Amino acid sequence: MSTIRELLVELTGTTEYAETLGDDAELAGSGIDSGDLVRLVLLVEQRTGVEITGDDMEELRTIADYERFVAERTTAGTAGGA
Image (cartoon, rainbow, N blue to C red; front, side):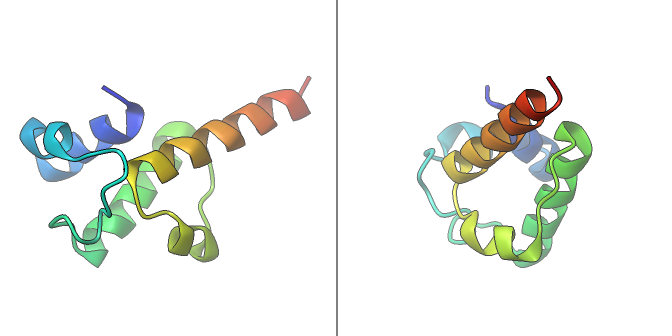
């Protein structure tokens, strides 16, 4: 299970939600409200150390978007520190 899916399980308290949601499904249209999206962003930031701005949040709509975003920022941070 991907990092974002694991965080969705933690957020929703159920594995079924995260397992049935497609990578390209819009999170906002899948039963997650705006408060949950903010909590997801906070969890992502806490667990990955990747900062997500308000502008970034507007672009992050799907699990795949979050996974790409975190991977890009994590790789950039690692490369920048080498």
